[in-house]
Amino acid sequence: MPDPRMQQLAEILVNYSTKVQPGDWVMVWTNTIALPLAREVYRSVLRAGGHPTTRLDDDDLNEVFMTEASDDQLQWMSPVTMGTVSQVNAIIRLRAAANTRVLMGVDPAKSRTYQAGRRELMEIYKKRASSKDLRWVTTQFPCQAHAQEADMSLREYEDFIYQATFADQPDPIARWQAVHDNQQHWVDWLMGKQEVRVQGPNVDLTLSVAGRIFKNSSGENNMPSGEIFTSPVEDSVEGWIRFTYPAVRMGRAVEGVSLEFKAGKVVAANADKNAGYLNTMLDSDAGARFLGEFAIGTNYAIQRFTKNTLYDEKIGGTIHLALGSGFPELGGENISTIHWDMVCDMRQDSTIHVDGELFYKDGQFQV
Image (cartoon, rainbow, N blue to C red; front, top):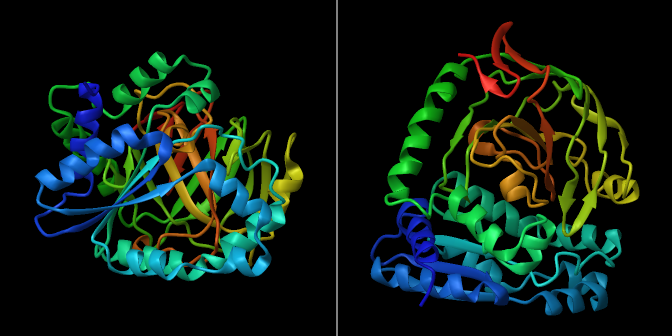
């Protein structure tokens, strides 16, 4: 008998996040580890009248590909994948892993080549998502590998995930709608504002949001969610930041990251661990050293770091910046093959002023 909370999560993904309608083509993109949740999502799509198709990933196959493939093979894009992303109505992505370090041994240069080969695919994806022609959501299946990363037992991690997604609540969709309504107040207040100043023991940044839109992220694309974010004006970012949590990407944890910005560009980047990987990714392309996102985490039900960006960037009382690709629908113009979120704690002696007015202090909104 499936965990009823897993069934609830499937209902959230299908009926709230992607709002599957009769006749929709829905891609259920999953890992072999996440098959229990994939079955429930598949069932929910059918009950909603959609046409589900599955794509199945496997950690071992991914490792073989990334270690054995030539540059030509790394950059080749399957016409099946390209055709699906170009036409499907909704994508429900279920993440899981048997080993979160499976790609640790891959040469960072190969990762960069692989990302470059996906540029056209990602542009199609972003364009369709921006126009709402494509609906998508990503979630995490509670599995042993990610539980270990989070320093939890599997039972604890299941409770953590289902609590953060409201899948343990009698009416989770109503809860997510309430999150949306609450966050909309801050998004409305930020409309038309010009300058953001972020200060604290780990940050002193100024950036422009003139002409940019903040998005109310309340579970439509990330499950769980709980953030408001925008793409800052690309050449406006000035100052420095030290990220208090490791920056995790493709199984690598880059610890103690510090960045310095001038005229929007990262001009100095250091890390206590895996600094070489950090700088290789920053050299991925011309847009990788510019910000694609500035965001504030609002999910106060998430209070512990789990080495999973899907959760960590939502921690109530934090901000995060993403290097690389911006959001065209919010006014973002930066183009890159990467979008790498990095999280900084703002819960002590930290402020955000917007156009000179105190907006946020010590992890709490002030407006």
